[in-house]
Length: 98
Image 1 (cartoon, helix red, strand yellow):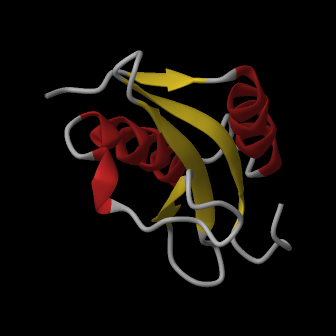
Image 2: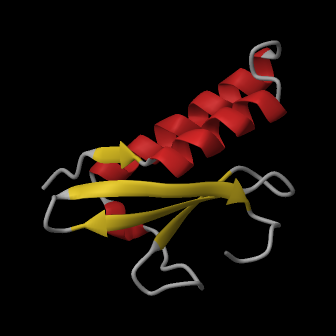
């Protein structure tokens, strides 16, 4: 079963802030990295349970993207009733837990 990926408003703001922070508009390498992050997020459509549960909640999962020291956590939930993956938050992996 495919689970459409829905980026929630908070995660959308996170993506915009990240795009600006890495200056993806003016750097080809940063833009490729950012596009890779977006592609990774949308791979959750086919197998959202492949990622580990977050330390913050057993109801949330996290997709890790990037290489140290630039690892980002994509925190998401699986809304079974709606049949969708909801991307809730995107944050740098070195930040404290939510």
